[in-house]
Image (cartoon, rainbow, N blue to C red; front, side):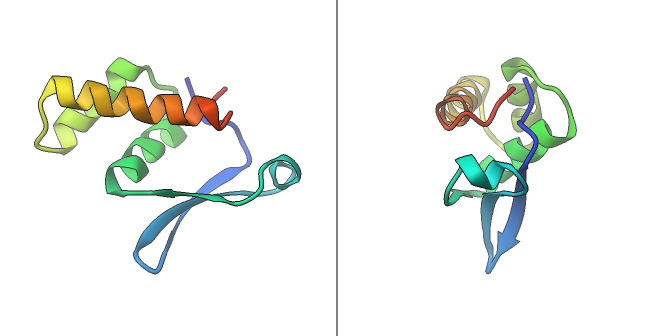
Amino acid sequence: MKLKEGFVLRQVAGSYVVVAVGLQTLDFKGMIRLNDTGAFLWKQLAENECTEESLVVAMTNEYDVDDKTAANDVNAFVQSLKEADLLV
């Protein structure tokens, strides 16, 4: 899976936000706020085509978290992206 084109991650006043750019602004209104972990996962998806399993591995390598917790967090994040129609 990978992110749809037309969305960018920015850090504004210490917070991470995702905003639509270009033609995506016609369909997507507003912005998405992410915490540090969400921004980390977003960057992983922006740089590579990923599976949920590869995101879990990246998360456990980056953070002091067990596999089960990482898998639950990744699954919740991916579901949120799917609901917002941000994945290809």
